[in-house]
Image (cartoon, rainbow, N blue to C red):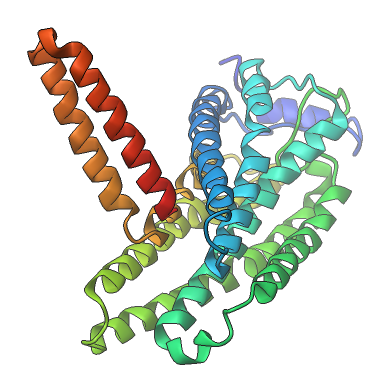
Length: 362
């Protein structure tokens, strides 16, 4: 039998030792899959997420010196903070899975690491919902919103409400143990002994933290698309950007959030069925699928910075122009070695000009 698998008989033996015994897996599933898949995904997400959100947050702060912040900037700033809080914990999870699921950083840090994943998940959903509603009101009811968006007080109040609601939703999760009795395993959910209460909690937070915001976003963007198509006086650039933003948000929800919530609940149900004696290929496939969706859920931290591109009017054009000029000048360097020093000066001048223009746009 594969060393990465645990049999139902072994799980049954453990369960006979008492309710306090930790039961990791009671059906022979491919637990080794997560030990190479999740570290690979987490490593990529940590690098891209740290770079993208770090640059995005820095540009948002730098632009505040040249122009006042907008409601959209405040919401995106909070989204970046949520992403950064999560990506800084990923190196610890990479180490955990590469060590063969041996947690070396203590009980409290395990609990905090798992909590920050859910904090990022539901804060991202909350702020993406706020961004979607903001865009919806600005496009469908522009005159009504014109006089109400002059100050940032509503944006700051909304941010506080989102953080407060997310923390309130996640507070019951701290009641459930995240480590086994040996102190080596760091569960992303909880042990088998708490399934009877943990499963209803996850179903409730799925509804309040994901389903309701998802329905709100679908309603907002469907109305936005209809309004843009009916109004022929809308600026084509605004129409294009709004549709792209709607597509990006829907992709984030469909790829990162929807599969995770479906298979997280299915995995908890499958664990209950395993404890009742069931062990089928379907249950094994649910476990592997759940590990895949955990990686997909973490991708939102590296995809959220794309919203900065969608929110800025000229940034994409500037970046394309910058890339074309840089490519052309680098090509000339390779073709004319005799003029290398002169071309290097040109490269420096163009890079400085483009960076200043991009900074102004942000």
